[in-house]
Length: 178
Image (cartoon, rainbow, N blue to C red):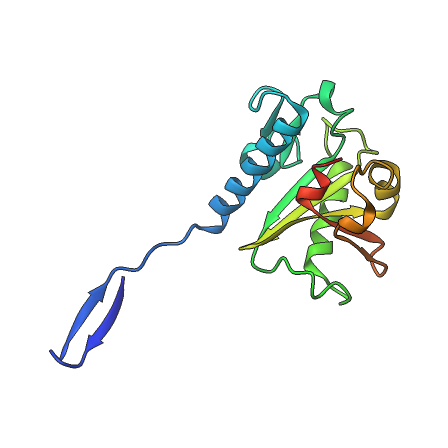
């Protein structure tokens, strides 16, 4: 609640303030949305062959989404999802870009994940309120999995290369067209 002073009556009025979604819940909703979109793209059952990992990747896998091994040939990605107010592209040339640090964390997690091969490609999906989602992919994985797979003409895509970090940024909706 927020208090507001009413000059006419010289007393305090209480005005109800709408509660926002906390960060953890916002992230969970974001992960669930991504998982359901991937399930639809792959034409597989959500909950059985793909699902959000409870506890932000702390149980079955360190990835935020678990994909059954028999479908990984269609979706080989070790996915990390972040929905934060600080998820911006405007600092991509800074020395300590938070978004890139999230991507590096996901690459490090692969090395310790029992359910994904060590050479699995890392995929960071990030967004902030009303902006994105975007996908960050390392250049080597971009060339191996993405560059030759688009059915759209490259001019129609948002594809930003960040040479300082050797990564590509795509729109999530374009990535889903692969």
